[in-house]
Length: 265
Image 1 (spheres, helix red, strand yellow):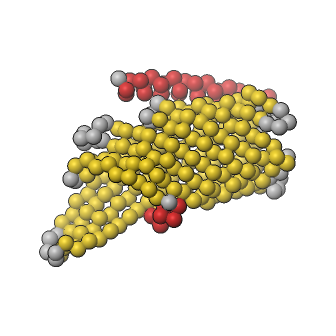
Image 2 (cartoon, helix red, strand yellow):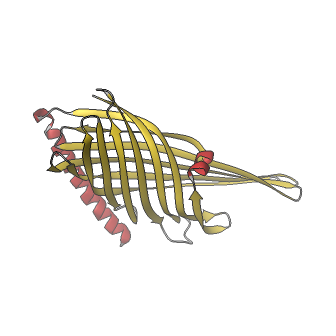
Image 3 (cartoon, helix red, strand yellow):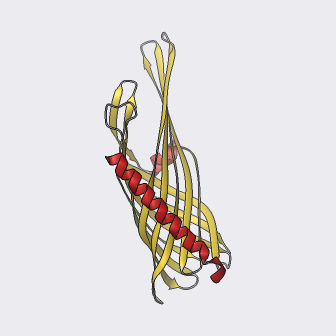
């Protein structure tokens, strides 16, 4: 029943987003559009729980990584984002790929056991916002969009010495949420300084998802701007149930503080 409900919600969200996208691009000939794209650096922390099946059976454990620990485990990271707007419509998008890796060795008798864990977090998001409120002090957009998330997990255990052997296991889970929320732009000292905040909820693929972002943007050049942003994502996802071979559980709060640079035209 849960899978059927998610399929219905996903179909409705796809239709709604397709309609919003069509409306956005139907207005291209009627207004001047402005664009921006950029990337940056961030400090990230995760706090929550994760669970899946191991060689010894299902496990669920606490995940608590502060920014320093997260940085120590980071093997690679890449992301970018951007926007397109004509004042009435605001399209926002982002793409990210983070890879964490940890390796640990222990000696059991005359055998060295090495455990290696590799965890990839991939995702992309796109929203189309329509201006629903405008004044000299604030602009508010109603956002509709999609957020895609994928987790890839690789685990290997290698024994060398008196006993030699190797075992490995890998799996991945992905989900797509429909997004409904708002973007609020507050000119502080226009056009150089703007306070931008976003709030949205995701549903359909995950069990629940809630996202908040707020930050200040400084337009220091006609074509260049920089932004300091704080982000918070609370997401819960479970595939199957504990004891099933494909069971996967993720319930965590992801927080980050980032500095980005955008090229605008």
